[in-house]
Length: 218
Image (cartoon, rainbow, N blue to C red; front, side):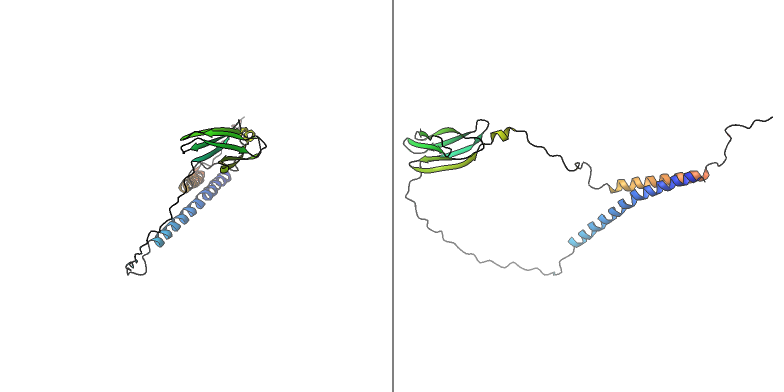
């Protein structure tokens, strides 16, 4: 048997063993862990007696008397919306559930003028105010000399229009199954069988060496 064929067969055997043996070890380890988990969960309870549930004592709760409120509900309510870009505007909606026309005022703490308005009975009124860029502004609604709604808002329309920053992933996404142990084992066994075939075929290969150029006869 020629030495190169022996070396090639040995290389195939080593590569096949390196692929197949770790896969088989992982497969056997996962099977043993699954069987131990099943046996632990299926173990019966040490005590075979059953305990009857203890009766619970029923308690009755008497409803508590809540004091009746004599104050009339507030007829005017307000809702302050979010910032709308790129106009940096905010919609303030005031609703009047009363029976008469009501006056209200929208204020901002950015040194701008107040916005007076009125809402009819059983109606709603929407007022649009504009905010300054990159400044925290307190929007407030006053009615009958008292504050009924307030909200702190910041207009970041310039930053909202910029393209979002995309970060590169640190690793490639996983697209295959979690475990392909049997496929790796089959590949390793196939490589080892290839080495055995090369080793066997090298033993039966003819060892004669034919002359390429025939000798010249006188």
